Image (cartoon, rainbow, N blue to C red; front, top):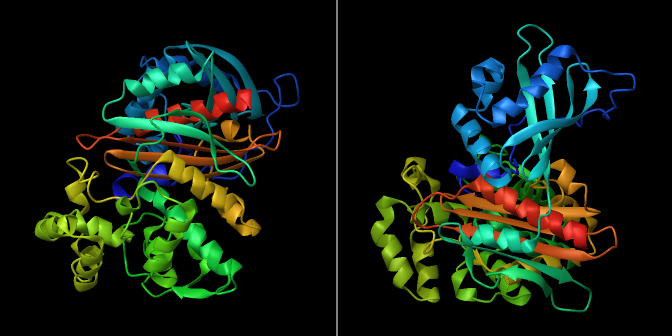
Length: 445
């Protein structure tokens, strides 16, 4: 959701990522060592050194190419490796290497409690440094929900998840939950409600996916329309795709303006929400950011004390003050800001109802938009016939939400959030936890 934690909204799951010189296309089908390709000796050496890397026994500068370290700061590498060690223990051995070519391939790396799948690229010239490394997923040894719940219980702040079975003609049914009925700050997950209202208006023939709408005045966003001028014409399908797949806030606010705040609020009520007062008035991203700023301390206090009708009047009277012109990203540097007061909120049950509504849309574009960003590694995503995702984050907030279909044709909503109003949450750790929940469900469904 917020600019300072956009990487989660973009779905950069527990990954080092490839440098710009490698590209983002799907790698060639891996081949076994006994077939045409064999990795070079240098690649084999770098693969073996992954054990040293994850056990902190080799310097990053001795392992990664300069362009990689420029793209991925050492502080981020430290955070990722710390998260991996916390979740899966010490790196032990290389189980296998499946080459793409002589200088790239898929590696299975054994940890104490899991097997990791990584894709690695090594520069072909001396000193043969690693220019690309992507953690694709983990297979946890003997994992189950009870182990996951123990880990969630040990987290600071408040965290919970729920799995719901989605079935035609029935309300979502709980399969497994841990504090799943509680309200959480959900960040950009709220954008799913906007997609639901857009899909409903298209179904009624009020608008089309091809209908053109102007891009909203600037909000805080990364990628997408970050540098586009306000008023740029985009189709509703383009705006919705940007909103869901890369969590573009300009596109989000454009859709709120176009569809109507009141219409979206009515859609939330129709879908069902356990505490409707916690999500109405339905704030735009620019409004939510602005309310958190020090310059708006009194306005925020007045807003929080007011009734919903009075809150709507406060928003209408203060359009200039509730614009991105008053937003200062540096204020988020000290940690969470008012996540228990100014946010969008939902329980896992609320999200399950929302996903069930979207699932039942007869328009295939809805599911296509949801499936662009999987939110987890490709190996884990491939365990499902269909996987749709939307997440959200800011300091102190992470929310990850999936709608999946199993190979047996069964549909599930998997929703989990972690909030801490006092300090940052470990987002990589939560990505790993949610991935484990999905994998356990995949094994048992």
